[in-house]
Length: 236
Ligand SMILES: Cc1cc2nc3c(=O)[nH]c(=O)nc-3n(C[C@H](O)[C@H](O)[C@H](O)COP(=O)(O)O)c2cc1C
Image (cartoon, helix red, strand yellow):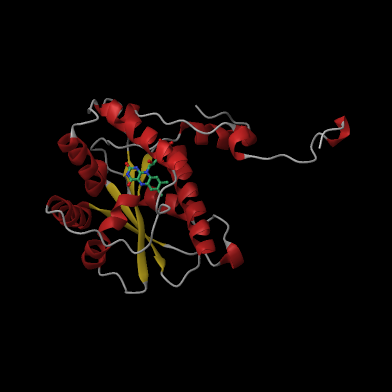
């Protein structure tokens, strides 16, 4: 349970949140989705531009998108993402982190390193929003600069935490952008919108092995530099 201390409540939510890739059948009502999206919009943004659009889907519209995406992935349709997520080529140190995250996932699923068919099957679940009752497609005006992607990222984090605070689970789905054309057609998106990612939202299935996936984080000293804090002690 979250503590009532306002300073540690967010820390507890951050520690508790993790990507959830299997959901129960329990639905999420519109009022909860609205509240979560309103929380997402509370994120700050440069010049208060509030970039990004959230397309919340459930029921037949979500089933329709899922069917189209799953078919595109199954037939091996060429990817047509509209922006690049990762550095190309990926430096070795980052590749190692990517591999570790993948291994954590496949280990939880009991899928061996060489079992390509099972890995493909697991990957295809991205396109079914991992069975979540709510799928959110995130788009941004393609004219926006890199800073606006940062703003949108903050909205995503706010959304994840607002869901977590309500006992709901999420995962980001960058893989959705691989089939941007399919998403454009299914949702009738205006041409100026770029598909950024999807979000699965629902109640975590506590029994599903995939939800036991655990990832690690860098040590503080690996991603921070402190200057001046210890000046009084003669350190620089
Ligand atoms: C914007 C975004 C996109 C993501 N895309 C995917 C995805 O396509 N498929 C997937 O299985 N996980 C995806 N993830 C989940 C990450 O793999 C996950 O956040 C990372 O491994 C850390 O694990 P954790 O979220 O459980 O802490 C995404 C996360 C974010 C924030």
